[in-house]
Image: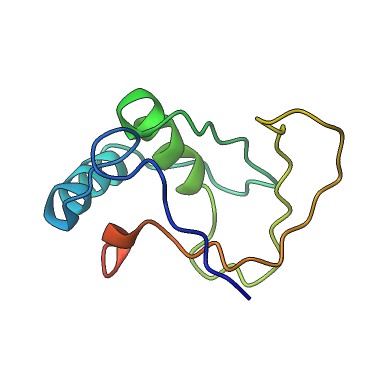
Length: 100
């Protein structure tokens, strides 16, 4: 199984510097409380500068003890009709190590 390398790290969608990224994420989560008893969430993915605070508010709704399954529904940015699955290890942005 291959690992997909991030293509937009380092300033375009999220900071490439782990310290800057950690500070940014901390500020987003410190400024939201989420909502109790969420059944599902809708999360934008326009990059932290554009939608980071809304992302944090959405993710803050998920109980920290949640151990179920996530279903991700998203449009294809490349066209075509799904459903699509991936066997790649999508990993995470490299600067996330130890941030969350």
